[in-house]
Structures are given as structure tokens and as C-alpha cells.
Length: 278
Ligand SMILES: [Zn+2]
Image (cartoon, rainbow, N blue to C red; front, top):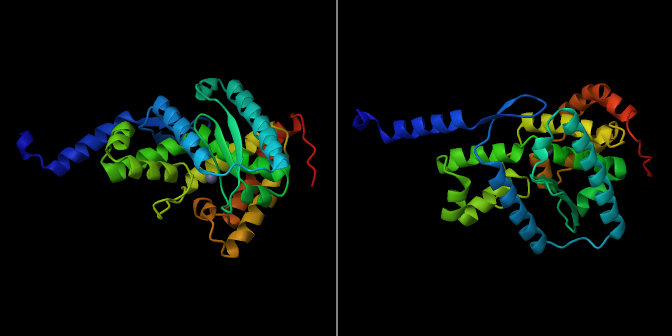
């Protein structure tokens, strides 16, 4: 009977098995997601990628900027720890070893890899304008990591482009291509020239969680409106930055954030508020 199955059918059958085995639930939002890569593999690969990324890029010499990134990052880290503890989800931070870096770059970007490796680029720090704007970016990027969007994207890529093979096999067989796909999945840059836009679902989840985290950290969530309005303006001026293809900044996003703000205000009211200098 097996002889009658075409290789196409066998492949589809294999993929269905992988899909059944690889479903997970996004914390907090409860959305079901595809998650094929074990957490340990994700975290060890992240640590390696972070290390080689820093070795290949220029660390900023702006000591004030570095201090600010570390300050805001650490406040948001503590907010995430508090929030996940209150939700009984502290295990999501198992294996995390937080680090916050500022790199000198003409690119507009920032990202957080699983395990808590956060990188802010000097151009986006400038666009943030102040501590409140920086809290929006860092909160949003950390939220992507907590919701495991990178694992989901990388799993989708492994399934769509490599027939569902394991990440370790892909890295062993096609190291360069896999590394480039990894960078794409985690928002570190599109080295293949074709950037998958982050899905609307991922962006909305990261906006929502990011607003919660920044509010608990003591930053007024209303800073998110000003920040994304500035991004929308920069994007309309045809800025070629990749960040705009991964993070469409438009009226829809701003409207959604406006709707969410009343629901996160209580976190801000209860927080140890930060006075932002402009
Ligand atoms: Zn995002």
C-alpha cells in the first residue's frame, strides 16, 4: 500500500505529523502557534548569533546613549519578570541572561533575541527622541521574544523552504543559508534581500505586550502614539530602512494602540513612574 503513496503525499503526511507535534500556545494572548525548534536550541543559537553579531559590528562610543539603553532595558526586564511572575509564567524566562547593547549604525533597527539579548541601533535611538520613545521600542522588541515570534517564523521558514527539517540539520547542511534565514526570522536584517514582513498578528501582539511592559516599567504608554507617528512620517518620506518593511507604521497600528492604552493605564498608575527628560 505504501508503494501507492507518491513522494508528495508522504511529504505532506510528514508535514502534518510535524505540525501536530509542533503546536504551542502564545503566552498571555492564548493564540496557537507553530513552534518546531526546542527552546534550548533557540537559546544556544541566539547566544552564538549575538556574539558574532557584536564582533562584526561597531559598538557605539556614545556613553550617554549606552547608559540610557541599559537603564530602559533593565527597567523593562524587571517589568517583564514581575508581569510573568504574576501570571504564573516565570518559566518562560528560564535560561535568560539579559544583555543590552547599542551599536553604531546608519540602519534603523532594534531587536531582542530569545534569551534576552537586546540590540538597539544608534539611528533608532535618535528616532526615539527620548527615554519614553526608547521604552516603546525596547518593550515592543522584548515582547516579540517573550511571545516567541522568532521561533514561529523560523519554524515556518524551515517548513516552507527546507521541508520541515530540524534547525540543527539545516545549520549543519546549509550553514550560510540557514544563518541568513535566522537573521531574517529574528529581525536582524535581510541578508537574502527578501524580507518576510512580520505578520500583522505578530506586530499587534508585540504592541500589546510591549505597552504592558513599558507601563509596568513606569513609562507612560502614550509615548507609543508619538513614536509610531514619527515612524509613519519617516516611512512616508520613502526612507529605505528595513525596519519599515518589518514594522509597517501606519494609521491602523496607531489606532489599535490608541484603543489599547486605556486597558494598560492601570499598570502605569501602579508603577514607580519615570520622569522623562525631553
Ligand atoms: Zn515588531
